[in-house]
Amino acid sequence: MFWNYNNSCEIQISLLDKFVKYSKNTLFGLDHKFKDIKNYEDFKSSVPIRSYEDLFPYIYKSKLGLKNILWNGSPIYFIKTSGTSFGAKYIPVTADSIKNHIFSVRNILLNYVYETKKVNFLNGKMLFLSGNSKLSFLEKIPVGRLSGIINYHIPKYLLKNKLPSYDTNCILDWEEKVDKIINESFNSNITLISGIPPWIKMFFDKLFIKSHKKIKDIFKNFSLLIHGGVNFQPYSNSLFNIIGKRIDTIETYPASEGFIAFQDSQKDKGLLLQLNNGIFFEFIKLSDYYSNNIKRLSVIDIEINVNYVIILNGNNGLWGYVLGDTVKFLSKHPHRIIITGRINSFISAFGEHVILDEVEESISYALSNHKEVLIYEFTIAPYFSNNQNYSCHEWFIEFINPPEDIFSFSNSIEKKLKFLNPYYSNLINFKILNNLKIVSLKKNSFISYMKFNNKLGGQNKVPKLCNDRIIANDLLKYKL
Image 1: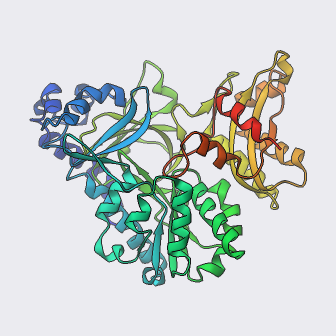
Image 2: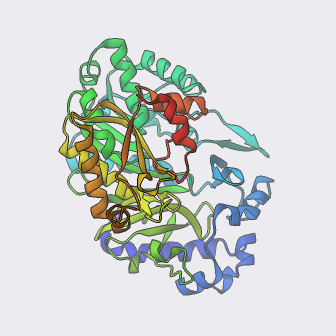
Image 3: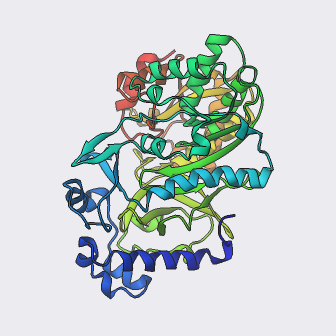
């Protein structure tokens, strides 16, 4: 909607050219001879792909307050997140890149209005279930979570209708924070709610306990749910059940490193890749990623229905940065994607290499065939047996409404997973693996697990796939 789809490839190459010229005198630009880069092929030769750890020496200099390291000037923020052997990651935000996040929020809402012609949600309160808004400082540069930083840049036309309050959003304890949000919002005209599906569900559950009413009877004009962070499909039935009706939803794909994509259509599947939003994208086929034949592609050369690893080059100063996510393209006009998982998010304890996309599609298939079933959360781990025939995948599932026949539900998952993954199918057929086993968990098991590990709320998510028994062994104490 916000640029000509037919010019997407040209826009991307233009962004790269602009970024390289603008950054040629930075430390990174000098080290990688940006002044000699004339085209994309030159860029690939000069700038290798990097993990956060590989890029850390440059980020470290920026953290010390040095200027013109990865991008001109100094970062205006660092987004603090977790996930590396270094501990916390510090992702730079520049005066240029902050706009990518802010304008994306605006574009999501404008695009929805443009497509649906629905505007009534703009007349009510918008509730954002986000992370802590408090900021710390590193060499006078503010540091915080992405959602917390964004709270300081919400446009004035949205700010007057935004909930929760700043003080409530700064509460560290997630359960206390949700209780306070309920108190602030209970008598409000909430029309839009945004957050990660499992935490939205927790909020709805607490509302139901307080009122004994469906959400539609508490927030009578609630009509739009914006979500991201995890695949919505496994949560959709339970969320719509407690809402009491189906409403419009918009999936988003924000990352600390940049705003990647959002659902631009209520009719067409997939997320519109943001090709004119401060990021030059590259892609590597997942099948090639761990080989000696890595081929980096721009959007010009991508193929449909192929798993790709995303590489970012942005106006926050990340160059050749491996985001860690994998995606597939559903179309090229426009460029719409689906998120298929993480590079390191798979189970291959027995050589099966089952990926997140296959798991989520399998459980969605089972849910579609067992309409009575509602789930809150799930995770999968390998079960190792001394007797080879008893080794299997264990699915730890917290049911809201359990299946009438647990074996039939399990067989539905297995059937779809075997269809999607021939390696897994062969291991089952040749009796190397036994059929998957479902372990039913007590109510609030995952909340209790996350709380015990100080990961309740915010942007924290339960890993769906594990190659060890660390999480599984903790969850066994909640077994029904």
